[in-house]
Amino acid sequence: MAEGTRFSQLSEVVTQLKNENTEMKEAQTRQQTLLEELVKQMKERRDRGLCYYCDDKWALGHRCRTPNLFLLEGLEAETEEDIFEDVSEEPAMREEQNTDQE
Ligand SMILES: [Zn+2]
Image 1 (cartoon, rainbow, N blue to C red):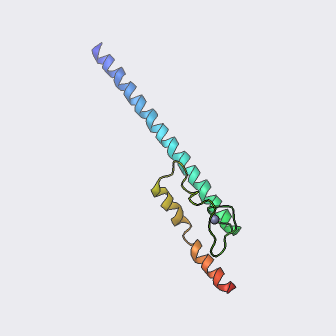
Image 2: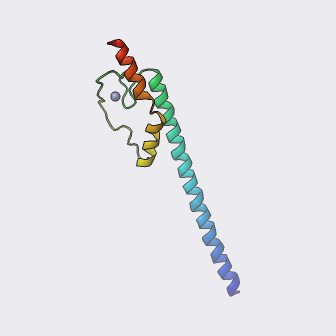
Image 3: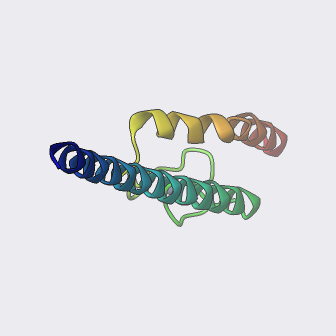
């Protein structure tokens, strides 16, 4: 009897842990999806010559009207760095274009 009760308590704990684990994975998946969507949007903006952070066209000396749009809720600092690394080729490309214009 006592053994059985202890076991059922244990499996309750295990079930709870599993649920927490599933929730964590779902949260990570949501975050990953959000990130991929963000990176996709950034690439689209780059193709259209738009600023990453606002809806203005990017140009030399452009200043965002709404800076730090990037600091979305739920994104941690580490993740943010990953995004910037993913599009790190962008600034060099723009510099070349600007040099051509002068
Ligand atoms: Zn901008």
